[in-house]
Length: 357
Ligand code: IPM
Ligand code: MN
Image (cartoon, rainbow, N blue to C red):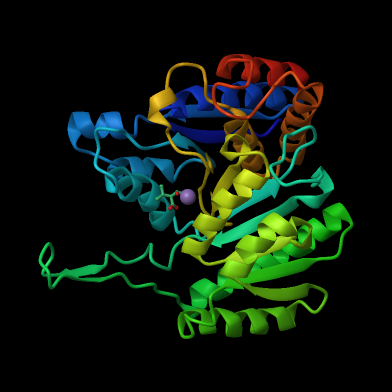
């Protein structure tokens, strides 16, 4: 009997629904080809629902989501909703409630892509950022005193726990070994922090990193301060295999990572807990100004579907989606990954990739 998965789909706002549609189109073909079946259930979550009902992510929906194998997420963000409401109420709530402590963000330059880094080839840019996803400045609300006065004081605290730090660093080492086996390259983990200034918080990261490294003598390690790491992403991306970093630094560095792989239009991500329902989303946001016009690049959403299937252990499905994307890019028919400059509509890119699966 072929295996069947239950996928919860949250298309969300802006370009979310149109890129998710193409992602599911490609996923459908790849699953049929590999004899894997899935059923999907759509959830109406996002800015529109919030404006209509005042609800972001009701507990009843959270409860329901627990019954799925994975969540496939488009984007959230609505011009009529104040910043923070949907981010905290939906995206961060999902990450925290399901304890999705890994934010996995591959940085991979596909062939025939106009890389902004001079002279860099696909073999130079192929690494993964393992971003801690439940702590740091994301975990606490912050405190304000005498707001909107001359005496205003704002306190925004970063929190790191030994347990939280250990589990993400361990995940990075295990991933480095797995990738090394798959790619036949030496395993390496780079810790990115700011231990020279955040001596307490990132001092903890350094100590835990050294402790975990001792459990993995076969893995090469290095540490970089985040400012130097930003420079190295641009100058020497080939030095990276697995980068492990804190939540906020990971947020910033993965936009840079998206840029060096050709743009936010092709950057997928996974919010993962190895033994809970995990959530997969493109790195990009809802881009309301171009929504509904067929201008958005669906490649990030399509590769996000591949990442989801890889997580579920369906390597063949995942690989056939990735191969189809690579083949499509090889042809040069997709002229750019930038919204509106692809030379094809969102739907046409989806059709084209589906035809190559
Ligand atoms: C991301 C986003 C989110 C984050 C925002 C929307 C809260 O930028 O997923 O990278 O900061 O994590
Ligand atoms: Mn971000």
